Each structure stands twice: as C-alpha cells, then as structure tokens.
Image 1 (spheres, rainbow, N blue to C red):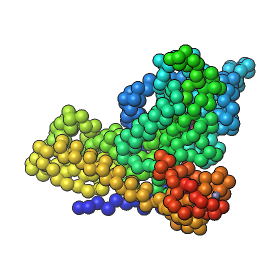
Image 2 (spheres, rainbow, N blue to C red; image 1 turned 180 degrees about the horizontal axis):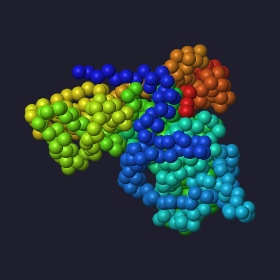
Image 3 (cartoon, rainbow, N blue to C red; image 1 turned 90 degrees about the vertical axis):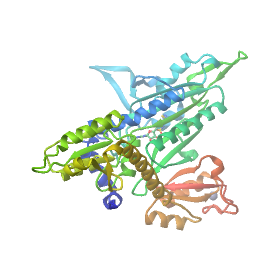
Image 4 (cartoon, rainbow, N blue to C red; image 1 turned 45 degrees about the horizontal axis):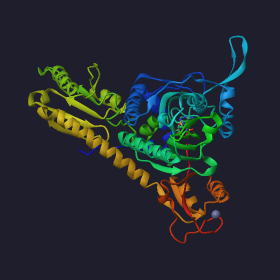
Length: 483
Ligand SMILES: Nc1ncnc2c1ncn2[C@@H]1O[C@H](COS(=O)(=O)NC(=O)[C@@H](N)CS)[C@@H](O)[C@H]1O
Ligand SMILES: [Zn+2]
C-alpha cells in the first residue's frame, strides 16, 4: 500500500522539528556549557564520517594533498591581509595567556586557515614546477557568531570545517580550479541526493580578501536558503600580502593566483532538513550508518526460527557489502519500527514465521513508507534496487521542492508577496549597481544571494528594467531569506 509520508511538522514548524531531531535521532548533544559548541554523538558522527569519506576520495581523485595546520595563529600573521582582517576581526576568538603568563604575541583560534597557511606557502612554493599547489584539511574552526546559533547550521566551533586552498601560475588556471571545485561539489550533492543553485555573490558580500565568491545554496523546508558550500577566487590578493611567489620558466618571479573551497557540517544539516519527515530522519543509503535493519517478528508457539532466518539474511547482505543490523531486542516490533524510522534507516526487512516457511521477506522503504514482499533468493538484488529507487525519489522530491520555491518577478511588490506567502528564492531584474541591490535587500528584508553562475545564465531578458532605478536591467538577481 502506498504509505502516507507525513511532513506537516517538518514544514509548519521546521525549527522545532529540527532541534528535536538533533537529539532524538542521536546526532548531537546540545547541552555542552559553551554556546554554539555541541557534542557529536556516535550515530551523528558515523553519518558525518560517511560524508567526509566521500570528500577525502574526491580530494584524492583531484590531486589535493591532505595537511593539518595548528589551530592557533599569531596576531602578526593574522594582520597581514587587510580586507581579511576587516572581515573577521569581529569574529575571532583570542588566546591572550598561557598558564599565568600573558602572551607577548596574542594568538587567534583559526576562523579559517588562510592566515595560518600562507606564510608556509611562501616557503613551500618556489618554482612553476610546484604549481598547481593543492592542499586541504577537515578541522575545527572558531567564529564568534553573534546571530542565532543552531546545531550544525550556525555554530561557534565549526567542528567539521572542510577547507581546500590552492595556488596557480595564472588567473586562468585558478578559474580551472574553481570549475573543478564545482564538479566536486556536484558529485557530493548527487551523493547526498541534494539539489542546489550556485550564485556569484555581490561585491558587498564576497569573502573578505576574495576577488569573487560563489555560494552553493539549498532550499530548506521553511523556504529559507542555507549556504552549504563556497568557492573563492583570491587572484593575487593573499599572495602579495604573504609574498607567495614562484619562478617562471623564463626565470621571472610572479605572485601566484589562489582559490579556496569551503564546506562544513552544514552538509548534514541540509540532508536532515531536506529529506526528513514527521517520523524523523530519512537518510540516503549512500551515507546511512545502517542501510538495512532486519526486524524478526516471532510468534508464540510457531516453531519457525525467525531469529536464525534474520541472521542468515544479515550475513548474506553483509557479504554483499551492505551495512546491516538485526534488531533482536525483546520489545514490540512497532517500537523497533519507530526507533529505526527516527534514525532514518533507508530499508527495513521484516521476517515472521510465514516468511520463513514461504522463503520470503518484507522490504519496507523509509522514504515512501511502502512495503513489498520479496523472494528470499532475490533479496540482495531487491535491496540494491531499492537503494537506487530511494536515491532517485529523494532527489526528485527535493528538486520539485526547490524548483517550486524559485519565482521570477519584475517588481518589488511581487517579490514581497513571495516572501509573505512561503518565502523561497526571488529572481528579479537588476541594473547591477550596488545601491539598487542594497535598496532591494532593505525593501525585501532579504539577502541578495547574487546573480546566477555561470554568468551566461545571469543575463536579464531583453527590455527588463531595474525596479529601483528604472535603468536597463543587466542581470537577474536572486534574493532569499537565509540561515
Ligand atoms: N558558523 C558556521 N557554522 C557552520 N558552518 C559554517 C559557519 N560559517 C561558515 N560555515 C560553512 O563554511 C563554509 C566556508 O566558510 S566561508 O566563510 O564561506 N569560506 C571560507 O572560510 C573560505 N576560507 C573557504 S574555506 C561556508 O560555505 C559554510 O557552509
Ligand atoms: Zn538600478
């Protein structure tokens, strides 16, 4: 029978749904006595590790080397890139003492690692033969966020901060790197069954020190967007501040061009929010710590041994490389269903005495809450096929939600209606002038995500006018309420 997937709470009161689920699904414990810093619980960390495993593999595939830098950065290093300072001075945590002694050079806890890495890049990069230079790390970083903190989404210790930093012999090669970052991100988004849009940030909202910034946004259930990835082209801004030069083949000395690519535990927040329903998490099989849970359903005085049958199925699935758990707890099956649905286990297999006799099993899908009977001999194949169906369905469902929350308008009034109705992303003509962009942000009480990327998708249709100044619109600008 077609299951009725309930998502009322999920959509009407997303914030409460999300905060409860962080606890009830065993993702994190928020009771740590420092605001904006939470504890990873075993199940949540297993999911995050599965996401990270994919990122490490993509870094390997694209020739990035993993490094690990110290978390403390001397003030002298932090001070070197002016714009970067301006952008972060209100957000950094300071270390001013060691033991009882005040430090003669204060240290900061890294908010991101440009100012930790780039003096070393200056020592490491000497010749064009050292380029392109590509490193990354997944570490904890610290930002004194003053806006509302929220587990995984806006934290003060970003405990799973992914940062890739590259150096190139030319602007063109840095641009090639940005395209590679977008490809990596697209592979990851498909792995998580998550649709997204990429926008080029407006001048007034790019990363401090960047020449331009790209943001990858997803649509959250409450119609607000969440930035889950950013790519920045730094040109030679940091290279000049940190003296990162290389010797060209002609023996000249040139500053390198640089890029960075950043993500964080927000990826998990996006998976939870986008795929979840009122029964809890719905995990894509790609990252589920338990892909199949088997629930034996014993019946009084039936001699069929449902436990042995369940274990035999589990062994076969495990041999096939599937992550499986048999729930042998002595509690009602219904209670087991509730627990594993809360944890988002993609597939449940139920086996009662009749299934043992008939050499069958029942497969229950977490995403559609539907069930079907399968022959014992076809189980591995059926489970694999069900994983593919779940990935496809999760991606389709999320894509429809995203598409239905992007609206193209011509006037501020129309845009306001969208935000009053159910929020989402508004695409509106723009002359490209900062004052008009800022005016629209103010009028709409929304953030300009920027213009569509790549730029050929950003052009305004013929004869569209900027709703603020009436001049010819050059671009389509995107606005949204954001996290
Ligand atoms: N307070 C926060 N909590 C959780 N994730 C965050 C927070 N601040 C930023 N992020 C995530 O970290 C990513 C990279 O951060 S960033 O500021 O945009 N970019 C950088 O720091 C660049 N140095 C690239 S690593 C963002 O795309 C966002 O997904
Ligand atoms: Zn204008």
